[in-house]
Length: 251
Image (cartoon, rainbow, N blue to C red):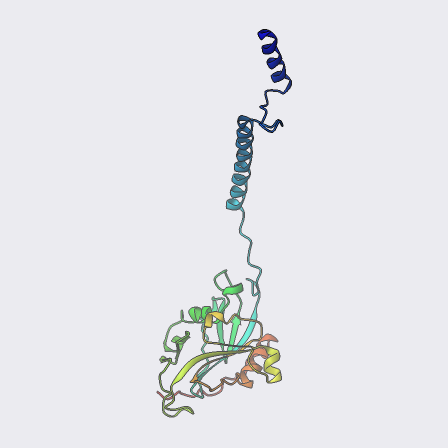
């Protein structure tokens, strides 16, 4: 009788493929089988992740297609207002001619990126002043930051008083940058952008920019019609109008 019972148990085990029965009476995979499945799944996921990581590390960088790109040429207008007095226009020279962001004189800025350093989102007013400052002489000592404006070799820091002889003499000034698009300029509207950071001023074709040091509450005026005319003239390949006599800012 004992042999008969043993034989029945072996037969049942063979019929179920070695799958253990649970207390509920249903059959399911053993722990060993579940462990093997988990190992296989983890192995496959590891292979897939390694492949994705390898592809990402070796993928070629996608060039920034944001305008202006290298090879493009735009023009913009720029004037500097110190306490109501328009500063002399930035000069031009052969030293700066090779740069992507250059001054053509008479208030005209040429935007023709030559590398990733001054193209796309990096074609900013801050980058222009960085490249402009590579020239020599006091005429090139011009710059603007969020807290100061340098013009004609003189620094005007936020809180400094406007010099005597200017329209806002004696009043504490503050840096601001106002930008008019071509359409806003023509329509006499408000600036397209007003900010204190030159890094936020990204160039667009036929922008007109006023960098100013003025008392709080005093709005900067848009660049003169002479600057507007010069930007359009150089765009059409015409010679620039003679630069008007510079006004020396009192110190």
